[in-house]
Image (tube, rainbow, N blue to C red):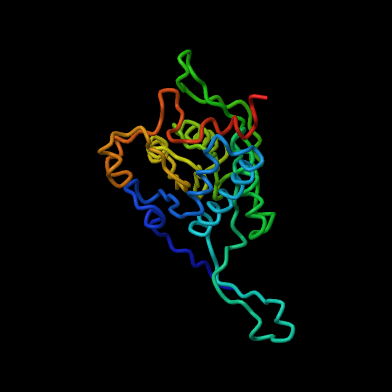
Amino acid sequence: MGGSSTTPFDISQHGLQHAYGENVHIQDDALSSTLLARLSCADTPHPEVMAILRAAYQHLGAEAFGMTLPTVQSERPTRMAVSQPDAGVLRGEHLDPSQRVVVLDIMRGGIVPAQTLFELLTLVLPLDCLRLDHLDMARVADSAGRVSGVDLRAAKVGGSLDGVTLVIPDPMGATGGTLRTAVNWLVENHGTPSQILAMPLIATPEFLASARDLKQEVKVFAGRVDRGLSPEHVLLEVPGTLWAQERGLTEAGYIVPGAGGLGEVINNSWC
């Protein structure tokens, strides 16, 4: 075993080229874009939606955790070590098994993403360093259907958040109100994480601005950024170049192009 070898770097230099700042990573690969295109389509049946949701989060989680979680130099014997004691040993950089990670489930849309990432982490970190917490939250709309706030109705938090990596995989990063409410409430009541990873599959420029303006630093890992209601000249620029003029939300707070009400789709709320 060896000491920690993590080196901070600009996550914005990986993935899609953009001007949203060093704390934003947007995936830019054919697998991610195809998964999210199928997730967004009205003719994708529900069983496939759920399978795509899990696959997209496994892909996003692999990138995010590989870039941000602390590592150590270590030695691990393989099955060949029995017959080749010296050569059958892997030496290299691996995730630090002493770190603490808490995944936050924001019900309803975040239930499956949070469980997916928690289970991914159990494959590479000791279970006693991991936790899955829960917040029951819902957007509040005014009489015209516009989002006017967020209602935090219940919480199940298993302990302190001091020094942990806090992972928030709410799939649709729309207004940023849910993220802002969750982070502010958790820090006020349960301590300060060492880092916060917001992980929407689809984010808007408005969401990225809200994350940027939080008192706590938040690193955003997104599958794509949707700014479909921006003026044509803005869409011709590298994303984030004319950030203040970018728009990805309808008046009612839905993402365009988006995926419709993904929380309702996931939970089949119309039945």
